[in-house]
Image 1 (cartoon, rainbow, N blue to C red):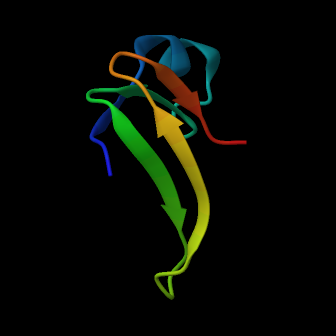
Image 2 (tube, one colour; image 1 turned 90 degrees about the vertical axis):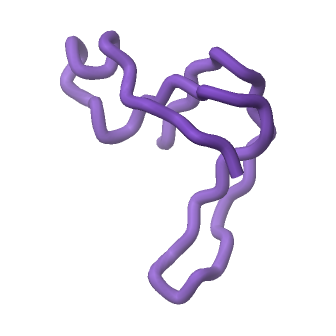
Length: 52
């Protein structure tokens, strides 16, 4: 799993809860309350990732 931060651009466009700047290469996992992985996406350092 990778670390991420909200992007300034995301704050400007009003969807700051869905757009993230990736701090290190790895993968993003979306996990539900039961701990089940719903989505996995490989990402690169410095990339922008958007949940849809």
